Length: 403
Image (cartoon, rainbow, N blue to C red; front, side, top):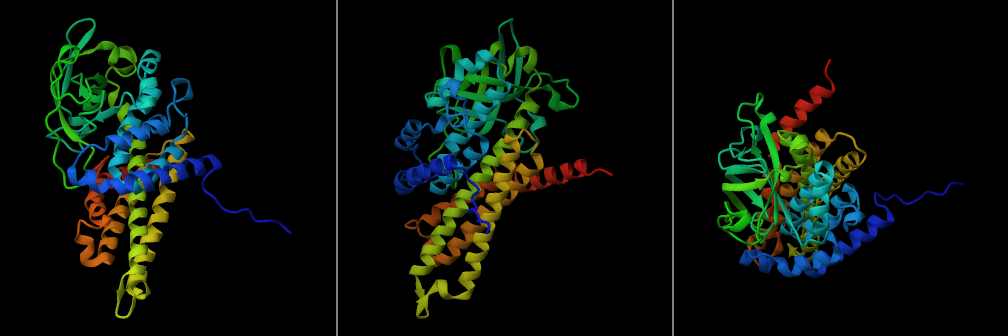
């Protein structure tokens, strides 16, 4: 007689880490999220605890002071953080993309210089693609860098929608270095732009790197989203990602590689937000009574709960699959796009269904779902809109199955 082993999609190590992060979310993030959301203020005490837990160095190799964990484990951590509040996950997500770019494309000197401080959270990173006049058309970037002497490039232009734009110490910024390049994307370079964290108008070595007041948003509060203004900012040649010889005009491919991870990030955030909405809906529907019984006993509510739970599980599986493919060294452009598309739409769907289940109370700021409902739309836009995901998925499918 064979013995069936219990199914699990997590290793023992992943279970332990996820339980630790979930406890952190339950005890420190969820009880305080409403305060920081209402004040739109940076959750510094929570971030300080995240540093102590080592969450800024999850994927950074142990030789640089990190945990050296894989993307799949990181996605599980992001889900748990986002279940608490997606703004918290946003603080580590852009930082994670920066560390990934360094680990994959950085020179040995760049890795030695930045990764140890990034692993502890002492130095936090942001990355910047978008600009005021472009959204999804990355190849149309106008911000530029021109070599002014043997040791420096001068960067000029404005970037937009930069998470952690003010409080970061490093910004991985994509700018144009070859105006004549054809096609245009071959003339883009990624620079590691240093600045003083928390300073709006930099001076000294960082003069010309300015951060206007943060953008006021419907949701995704607490973490700042900013413009970046480069006005004669001098960036060392050594700060071209991968070095001048290997990295000049190679920034587009580097950033697109990183965006596959970014889309897994956003997918994990969608799963976490949707999971929390499901939990709130399950609890409220069993507490709230109407027509003589808990509303959970009404078939209309049960159908909503069933659809929510099914979509959450499907989104989680898509996200884990994309992450595991990337960990295995496989191209995951289609899978990451599918995960991001489905999980972000699931987040929006579950937030709305949860609010509907709460009725009038869901519209009140006294209930957590009101914040979640405002946060959810961000996931439909960040790292490529749902429409862009469908374009990418469709195009790549035809490439893979060309007849």
